[in-house]
Length: 417
Image (cartoon, rainbow, N blue to C red; front, side):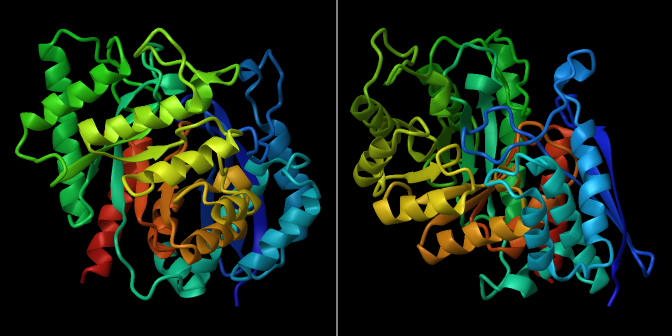
């Protein structure tokens, strides 16, 4: 079996122009693989810690040279010589080297870059595509299938232009569509949305995940715009596609209340739950992600109890791909789906464990990009190999997002042969 001969990290840029880490692994049989890690803009308080240099005179403090050094000087000597197919052992070595509960010593960005490149090296060493390697290694599903894409069409909150509170207004093709048909639907509607915004004389710049950030006056306006878009298409709402929302409630949570521009008064937790209930009734919103503040745990329990029969309740900042948080949410019935982002926890093995826990509980699993992305398509293979129900890769119009959608097209063609 091939062994890891070399590990070398370097600083590259993500889709926002912020530095991030790419790590290259060379095996003793000559195989070379690389993996780059993403970074978030709207980040949960309980995420694993990424290390930044904080040197104001360089990349506005966003540099990652220390994290790169941690890979090259601390992690690499411990990993060189290991069998890349021993993912759990490699990841445990990384966790032990760091020794902190939140990866704050070496940095989750440094650690994940090595964890991901090891997984790629393991797949290459045994001659399997990465998605199939995931599937054969963990066997969470009996047969490979394609996840349903969740397309980001309108950005607000921390990802938008400052005039909408909710973070993402999404379109989700029905799950009975093949992936290629679902992608076609998303692209066609995205083109049509641009045409509609131009016809209305609206500003149609895009947010950091590629979705449009138009000059609308309220969150309701965004939903109405999507209804108009769908009504002008050949697709039927609640038949061919559904609406979904990433509320990103941390952004508009102030002093124990929630402030939306849809009305003058702030919303209590119960009132915001009613707001989401109304969205479901009016606009067929089938899922709400991060509908409440990440530490409003009792509120999450209420929201799940009252809305789970009507929509998916997805935890992102609330759960941060963290086993402890997911187990608690399962026990307390505080969610029905988990958003999976490997860099929230820091290793492939810990991410896999969260997916298994969620699946065993009967939850839906949504694999997600980050706002600061690279062209690495690791997350697409992971989603297929671990049996993800949905993938959330942003708008279908920017290279770092399209790379992942295109990777899924290739995987679909391979598993449908």
